[in-house]
Image (tube, rainbow, N blue to C red; front, side, top):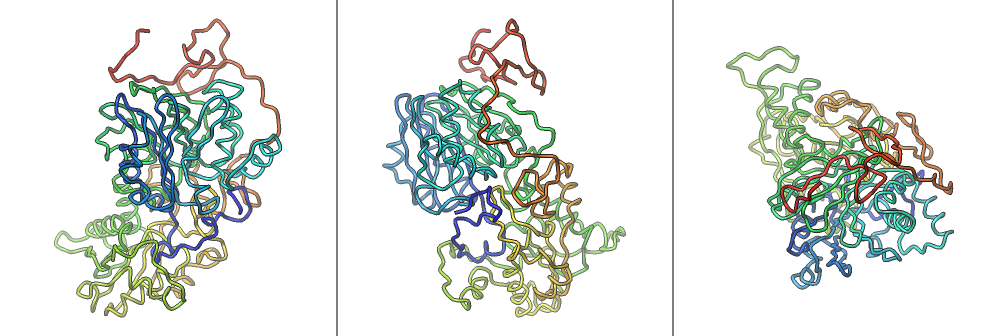
Length: 554
């Protein structure tokens, strides 16, 4: 089974997804969470947080807690509500823990690859939750296996767990994490339980999201701020690329360490386009507002004076809202609209059947083609006799788009135009998104005109890469654009890069560790006589927060 380091893109363990909606969209990645509380059990807050992150993965779910003496684990296949019963939560003792929901993009679909991944070794126990994909997992696994490490899964998360455990045998916690970060190459946001300490780590390019929040009686690390909101907490900030966050085991505060100072980041723009909940804040941007801005840019670049702009539910809704709002101010040609003139009407034209889940079975081609009709049904009064613009977030294979155009035409639309709130997807993703192979991607070797003919629309336009960067208020140099440009921010076998980057050598002995400190945002070597931190004498924390609880004297 290929992992992220294979020249072939990962495809969710080789199992086709049966749900019609995801057949023509990028598939979800994973969600991670970690909490440290003062004096209450962590299991139920973790459980509620995983519910808030359920959209990021539906194949498996799990929680690992620690009670100060031993680790407790419950991991299984299925949705959060199916995996955990009341008795399961009661058995997960301890006020610290980590959790995970998984959509597999590397490794098999079975219990051995479900997370958090647990490891017990000489120095303690680890529970590790991972969102992302390693590019060099294969060579790291081979080296570790040659050194006596026994693997129980084919996923890259176990590679990280073994590498971290090995480094913990020869160094303290922060040194071990930094050494691990220097060895693994690819995308990762991690929530780690090391005995009764919870850690959060974000890869040096910040490809996958991770944030930290404050609760009434502790702290939380999560893939999205929606999990913080669910627990009634307050978002503090995003974990920075290359940063380690260490939660105090008694829930009294946290320490952070900027272990790697990146020259450029590589944030995944699809978090804002499709994956994240619209009520989440990622990299200081509210996802809903970003999607509205993307919709406004879509009107400015490719607006058409149709009667109705209607979204493909649910992710297309904010795009269509922004698109329609922009149309009320300017015409499609960019001229100011008369004060008493109407723009394109925003209207719901597709009703979603929410009871067709991921387990819906479509064994024949005819049933697969009928799947969209089971999932979405047009509202005739919205479309009949009108020119309609369907607004969606992305097109992967084109199957769903073709069927939607047919549905709307059959419901009486005179014209059907298609507008997409993201650029053309022309290449696979190697960093945690199941984006299909180049052979399956409808836009890999076709023009917009050719795609328009294939899906049967009267017109089709995608959003430009520059418009995405503008909507995110970000530089292209700080975004991962591999799926829309074919050039990647990591060293992937057989693929072009958009920056100077090489994967770390495997098998090379690590350099001797020397003391350094963080000054502002830069690492500096320090002489032995310099002031040091009480826990890790070789490093000063970037910041320390105690929120008034158990604040020590310095």
